[in-house]
Each structure stands twice: as C-alpha cells, then as structure tokens.
Amino acid sequence: IYQLLPKDKSLPPVVWHWIPWFGSAAAYGQDPIKFLFDCKEKYGNVFTFILMGGRVTVALTPAGNNFIMGGKHTTFSAEDVYTHLTTPVFGKDVVYDCPNELLMEQKKFVKFGLSTDNFRRYVGMIEKEVTQFMANDASFKIWQMNDINEWGAFDVLKTMSEITILTASRTLQGKEVRQSITKDYAQVYSDLDGGFTPLHFMFPNLPLESYRKRDAAHKKISDFYINIIRKRRENPGMEEEPDMISALMGQKYRGGRTLQDHEIAHIMIALLMAGQHTSSSTGSWTLLHIADRPDIAQSLYDEQVKHFRQPDGTWRTPEHEELKELPILDSVIRETLRIHPPIHSIMRGVREDVVVPPSLAAPSEDGRYVIPKGHAVLSSAAISQVDPMLWKNANDWDPSRWSDPEGAAAQAYKQYDDANGAKVDFGFGLVSKGTESPYQPFGAGRHRCIGEQFAYLQLGTIISTFVRHVEMRLPETGVPPPNYHTMITLPKTPRDILYRRREFD
Ligand code: HEM
Image 1 (cartoon, rainbow, N blue to C red):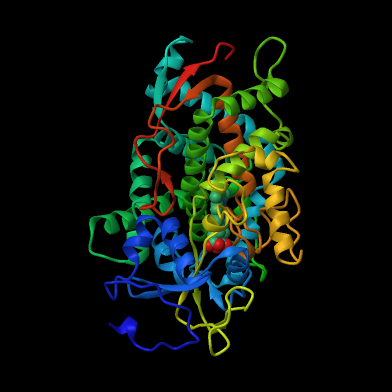
Image 2 (image 1 turned 90 degrees about the vertical axis):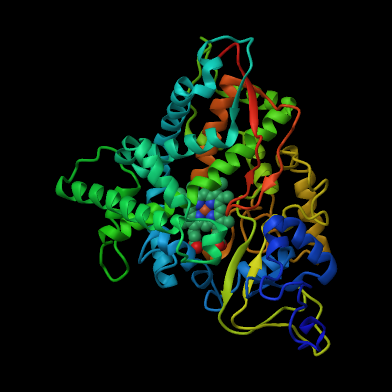
C-alpha cells in the first residue's frame, strides 16, 4: 500500500514489488538481464528497486555506464558495497579493506607483475598445462587413445575450471602454488570459494557451515602464502622464475614502506578469486559457441594452421605478440564477452546525494532526479552490450562483427555517435576503453580490471590449444542457458561438449 502513497518527485521511480523488505530480489536474482530490460521498458533508464531492505538505483545505457563508472569515488564507493563480501575471503588491509588510495597503489604493484616479459614466458607454460591436462584427465580418454573416429565428451565448465586454476597458478601464482595443487588444496580452495556467493554478499555473517568453512579456508590459504613469502625472504634468489609474489615483494607504498607478508598473501588470494571464475566462465562460453558453429571452428583452425603449423606437421608455440595479432581468435573471445560478461552488475555505495544528469533521464516534475546518500547504484554492461538500440542482431553470437572494421560493431558505435551528436568517439579497436563505452566486460574508470591482458593471453592460449587438437560439436541440447544464481554468470548443466581427435594433431 505504501507504494500507492504520494512520492517525493525528485526520487527515481521505484519498481513495483509485492513483499516490502524482500522487494525485487527474486526477479533480479533469477534473471537480472530480463528484469533490467523489463524495468527499462516500464520506468526508463533510471529507476530504483528494493533488494533485501536496500535501495538499488540503476542507470542504464552508455550514458548510465558513464555516470556510475566515471563518477567520483568519493561519491560512489566500491568498498562500501563490496567489503563485507570480499574481506572475509581476501583478508585484511587489501582491496576494499583499505582506503581507496591504497587499492590504487596495490593495483599498480600488480601491474608490475603483469609485465610483457612475464607474458612472453607464459604462452608456452599454458600450452603445456593444457596438453598435459588432456593427456591425463579421464574425460579425454578418447583423445588419449589416438582414435580419430571416436567421439568423447567433457563437461566444459569442470574442464575449464581445472585448466584455469592450473594455468593461473603455473604462471601468476608461482611454482610453489602450482606444486601444491593437490586434492587437499582443491578442497580448501573450494571452501573459500563457497564463501563467495550471492548469499554471502547479502549476509556477511550467518551461523552456517559455509561461513565457518570460508573462514577456516581463508586462514589456511593465507598462512600457505605467508609461508612461501617467509621461505623466499630467508633464501633470497631462491625463486628462479619471476612471478607475482616476487613482484609484490619488491614493491613499496608511496611513503616508502614495503608490503607486509599478510598484505602480499591477501593480494594473491584476491587475484586468485578475481581471475578464476571470470576466466573459466569465459573459456566455457567460448568453447560452447565454437562447438555450436563448426564454420567458425574451421576458420579458427585455419588461422592456427596458417601461423603455427610447421612443415613437419608439428605445432610451434606462438609468441605473445603473435597471439595478439590473430583476428579470428580475438573476435571470438571479444564477442563471447559481449554476450556473456561474467560480471553482469557492478555496484557502488552512494556517499552523498547525487543529481542524475538530464541527458540520462528526463527530469522529474520538480526539475531533477536525485539519488540519495545511502542508496546503492548499479551499472550493467550486460545490458548495454546486448541493447538492440546499439547492436545489430544484438543477441546473436557473431564474431565477424568485430573483425570487420565496416561491420556491425563499428556501425553500432557510429549509430551511437550520431544519435549523441557525435560527442563520443569510441574508435574502432578501443571499444573496451572509456567509461561511456557500451562495451565494458572489464569495467571502466578507477576500478577497471587490470587482468584483461592476462585473461586474453590465458584464454587465447587455452582456446588455440583446444582448437588445434580436437574438433568439437554440441549435443542437440545446444548452448545452455546462463545460471545467474552464482556471483559469476555460468552455463547451466548439461554443458557437455562432444569432441574428436584431429587427424593432424
Ligand atoms: C576488476 C572483469 C580477469 C583482477 C574487474 C572489473 C570487472 C572485471 C568487470 C570491475 C569491477 C568493478 O568495477 O566493480 C574481469 C573479466 C575477466 C577478469 C571479465 C576475465 C575474463 C581478471 C584477472 C585478474 C583480475 C585474470 C587478475 C590477474 C582484477 C582486479 C580488479 C578487477 C585487481 C580491480 C578491482 C577494483 O579496482 O575494484 N574485473 N576480470 N581480473 N579485476 Fe578483473
């Protein structure tokens, strides 16, 4: 009934809901994309919905992305909405459990470890991990038997999750971590991961087993990294390969202080969590779409043959620079991230009243919309990336839209520019930059992802290796629908891919 009472006209419209405190939690949790598109149609680009007692104001379209992602961090705070989820998992004094200025410095330290020199060494390491996995995993028995006529099957998410953790630990995390990926480690990791769910986002502490397991797992993993760091400090020069731990051990905050062991340990956990589901989800969706489109799989294979097959029939490991210059591979990953961005909603806590710019939402009767302090704001690239106003055949997975400079993506940007008096120049090839871009799978602005290049390298190498070795198809069930009940959008089961060994493997 309170929804029928006269409203403060300066506030954005509130989404109609039946249960007061619970609000739109069910509709948003079940299918946020449908929910946000439905609300856009009913209420416009700016509206508020109730989520478990909180008020979340959404700003859609590229102008909405810009409003939130390009907003001041003193107005829109990431730590206010994320810390209760992330601090128990990552640990104290890093990321959102410290002043924002320190996070910016920590991101710089991590960038130092994501150097081109390191990337050059990683391609071969990732390739080797993937082929070793295929040579040992039970799902790849058919491949191991060397029979090119038989078809086998693998659960794509299970496979990609294992390969992602193996390859990330072999490269970024360092050799001690890679050597410890045993059954015990997998269990501890899975307990920690079990604490990173929408339930834990809504309720930071409940007397439930998953919360106890999360806390115990955090302590174990944190101690594990601290031990590695101590051993390295005691034996300088011990690690032969530079990795992220060594990069962080060599950094200093602006005041001149080095990072404490627990800070390094907690940044390492944050990186593990930031890269694991995002990359394994993207890898899974990419393979599913490739398996669904034998024509594109063939073009990808031809691209690999052209560049990396040697006269004697064996495969050459790509240089990192070469991997970046493969238009089909690049557009296949780019397009997958358009339709399946792993993070569908980005939130911030509002620290002071903010006026919504009239370009984003027509002013209310008293001349303006205000988002009050205490609301959360939500930006969703998952909406602008499939907005039919901006993209031709928006829901079709069509990598060719990226590889053709005259193609649909370029057209979409031109259309957007024209509609906005050409004030925005996305520039073809620069589409993932800028807070106003409709394409933001890696976020934008101050909190933008620093793992993009690593993710492209890791995914590009994993996908190339698969395409070289196996032909893939989907069962009749086709590409599965997304599951939005996890923090990261994942393919629902069944999600098997059928494969057969290639003749020239
Ligand atoms: C931030 C996506 C892989 C580390 C972000 C954000 C997005 C994102 C959307 C912005 C979050 C926000 O504004 O609230 C992705 C996707 C990935 C990926 C789609 C893979 C396909 C990685 C990897 C790493 C990483 C591999 C580490 C090596 C980070 C970090 C931040 C971040 C440190 C900054 C958080 C902040 O400043 O608040 N990522 N990410 N990500 N990501 Fe990634």
